[in-house]
Length: 332
Ligand code: ATP
Ligand code: LTN
Image (cartoon, rainbow, N blue to C red; front, side, top):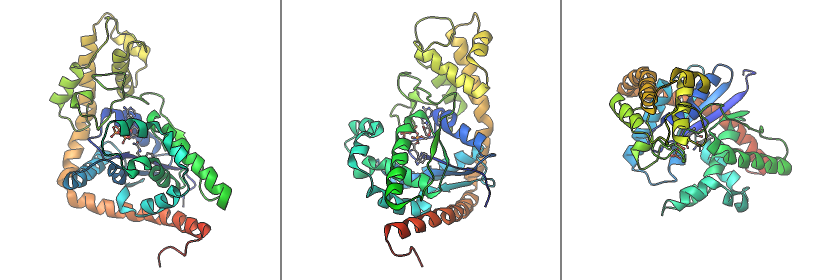
């Protein structure tokens, strides 16, 4: 047992991981993996809240796992696993569902957004944040790195901890959100007033991590920009502000430094510079990803080992919960 604090986070297996996921989430996960004991999962159970083709879901889950590794998450230092292979997630989620007031779920803006865009409004979509709470609480995670859009779900998780403790006494650890400073919200390339989202129907709205360089160049050069010419960070100009945020996150340069770099130049120059930067950043990632995907046995072995590691920790918490709420001992 280490005395490092624990981190848990994950991304849902819908669509393909995007630059938004990388900058807003995975890049932070990577930075945190030296300092914390990290559990990073591929959230395939969460993906079931929307219709999924079975074959595609399985392939995507594996592809996400390989992308996590290719983007620099280290399976030796941390536990990188598939959510559905650790059955404790579904078990604790049921218990927590029975503690969650519907009023709390009714407030969730993501449910409101997602349910207004689909005919498939199922109970899983509604109680999605409860499964998220189970993910977090099973590992007694202290810190949860997420993008801004997930803050409300974390608040719900914190409320559940209070409610549970009030009734049964101290059991879980109160999780704190960790929102990275740059790129907490990368916006769509065609509509910079909305979030870049990997399940967007229009692929022009996002750059996905495994897009080939040609596609990346085309998408970034075709990004919607605002009226004007001067390259200056201004929230009133969301198109340019978004491109500058991506540039800043990938280069480590401040907005002022970027403004200097592109002084006297046009929007088109920024787009060309950004497209090259994104391609250069992703080149080694693509190479590693291709190698990993050729070696499915290696990926499957790694998944098995990780699931066992995750189960060890999750199982202990769940046994404690069963004890407290009055169920018979879990498993034999
Ligand atoms: P979907 O569109 O399918 O809901 P998503 O692109 O929002 O997916 P998630 O799986 O919900 O991706 O999120 C994984 C992580 O990436 C979360 O921490 C989330 O906050 C972060 N994230 C997602 N999109 C962005 C974005 N555009 N900018 C910054 N962070 C993001
Ligand atoms: N719902 C999250 C993904 C996710 C997650 C979690 C993030 C599932 N379980 C637990 C942090 C902690 C999302 O980003 N869409």
